[in-house]
Image 1 (cartoon, rainbow, N blue to C red):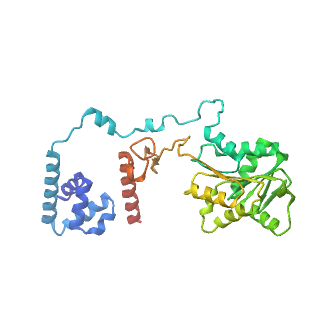
Image 2: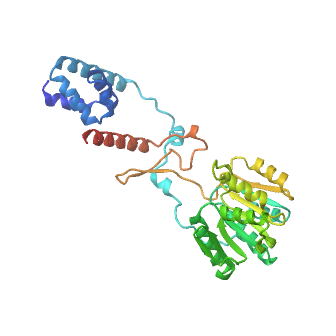
Image 3: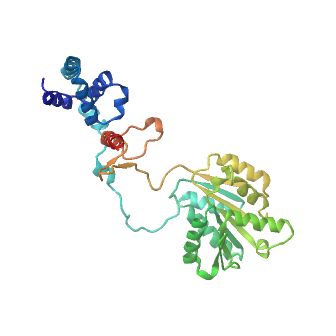
Length: 338
């Protein structure tokens, strides 16, 4: 067998058998390489031991022929259709801007607003469900009663975004912002700030330097309240809740609180009002997972359109598997060549 014949025979082998042949003839280190590098390494070995390589190729071919000779199990049509992986068209179907429709609040949104009349509220619902609607309507109610509203977030960038959003809703004269590097309209009835700023204001009040705005404070909104569990910053949220004036209602918003029942029980134990928990898992905006290969090829990540209910039930799409393998081979080859 000439070198060209040998190279052609190696190229025709399934990748699985080529890897096994490379491992037995060259060594396990070659498995980190791509297909072309494996073939060249085997060819180099064949120059000193051609009989060994010929025998190994014959064995691999015989194994492949035995596999191909096994009759394929053909499932019934219904089962095949049921197990068929989703195609890209189905995966992308429905994406885009929805048709305009009259807004109708969800029952849980109305439940949260009603519960705020009686006490504090924790809203733990998925991202995109409409937590901001509850915050806006609760703010509107507080302003109608001439009460001050404080909206806090853990990030300056998010505070700036909410500042712009609330100005469009309530007007620039009604909204102010207080962050570490920004102070705009601080006497406004609606104040957007980071949680640390509010905690510091409450510290001043506890020390006797009463800020008149706290006397009229009617609503405190703590966005991204899952930060209560943060090892470093969680204490800020705890102290803010503990020092919050008793006449103000607390509205905690989050999509990822792990123990909302325990948090609601804790608030009920330290606050003068009961804390009502509003929670559901239904996503108003379903999640879909796709894989974009560096070549520009897009494919569903999983066999189904929707996300698997749990990691243990996740089954990768065949095309995603193929692209993963291709990317691994390409990057390993480039890394070795460099």
